Length: 75
Image (cartoon, rainbow, N blue to C red; front, side):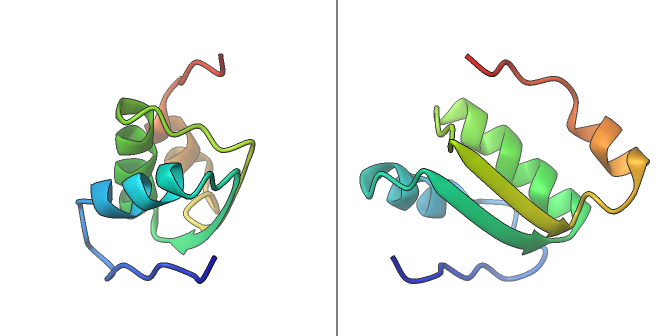
């Protein structure tokens, strides 16, 4: 699958997530600012996208960003 690029500050990742679900994407890698990743991750949960592996650079550089994501069930 080719990378899907979204503009920084984009708060609607539903199109990307739908594409990932449709294509059976189980590994998701991203470089996003913290607020963008939080939006992505919450929308992914809402749309039932649960990749087996998720790596993200930049967003998780500081403990405050990790805390802002909150708990998400893994099952």
